[in-house]
Image (cartoon, rainbow, N blue to C red; front, top):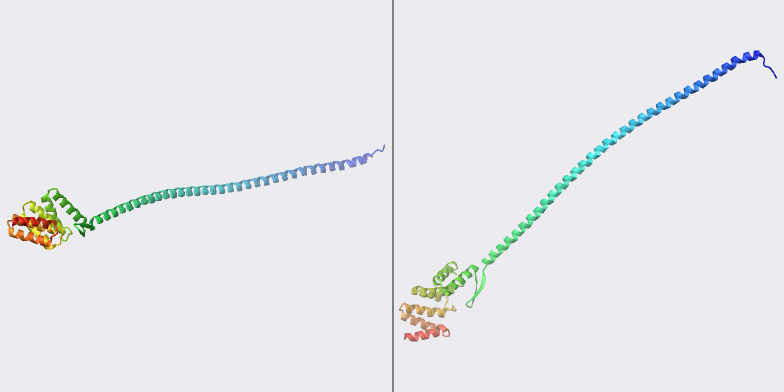
Length: 262
């Protein structure tokens, strides 16, 4: 076996120790660098984390503000919609009331128009056929005459006479004028107002000798004259009746009465 000289051994020992020292220093340097690198990475990560958190916080804050503004806008919109709905309901109620008022006004107008038409119809002349004559008469005029005649037939002679005289005063051109004079004369005769009856019959015959009751009026006139003791006048009246209205029933009665006067 080969033996290493001691001189070499002593010379190599410092070299080995130096190499070992260098190797140990190199190991220590690598760990420190690694630690520094790790710390640096950690610091960067921490910085990034804080920056990220700050950005996120800022984003969250902005979004929170936007959401708050959006909620406020939505609430304002909701309030506006509710206000609009309330205003719409109010307007709808007003419109419905206006429609009801309009309908009521139209109904009143229709009723008023009907009432006016009815009054006008009551005032408009109506066609009357009476005693063979056709004429127009005021509705009130017609009712007044018919009522007066009804009173006469019930024996209410004074009432009938007053009504007929009022009729002639209100309607001097009435188509009932001849009949009114005739019945006034009869009412006066019944009341023994022979002069008044005589005047009424004379007026009737003077204004319309063709009146359908003219023969009866002449006969009644002769009766008035007889009651007034005017026999000559009565005889003349009866003779005129027989001559002018020979075919009438009044003429037959006049012949009989004239015969008694002789």
